[in-house]
Image 1: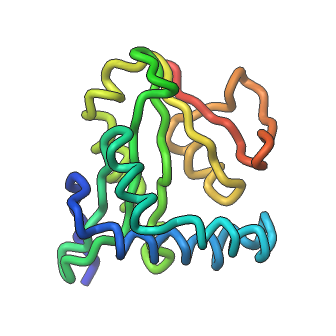
Image 2 (image 1 turned 45 degrees about the vertical axis):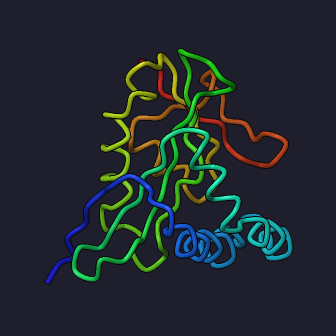
Length: 161
């Protein structure tokens, strides 16, 4: 039987599970592109307190496996440096066991109804190398039409609306 997923707003208490989801992505997936040492350092920086702080920057959504009621994904949409016309996606992660099962697209479709998305003329995402193709499939393009890496080796991508 195929899994059924839903999306809801982040609730306090989700942060512990999300820390694990994010850390596993960094150390199991992203380490192939960025090295295990740097991903271990980054993983340690994701704490429950950091997730709670991020949830206050904008609107955080979580993906839930309806069969188990387990939180398996997250994304935050927030103003881009307090802009009223630009937003940014932060910490878009899906539990490694659920990659390529549609939960990322489901989360993004939920974001498209968020007030920070609807008011923005431009939505930016700092993409990992691993997630680059995923964002292209969602309709993101390279920022300023140029594929380049920023100082943290993320690919800056955007949707212009």
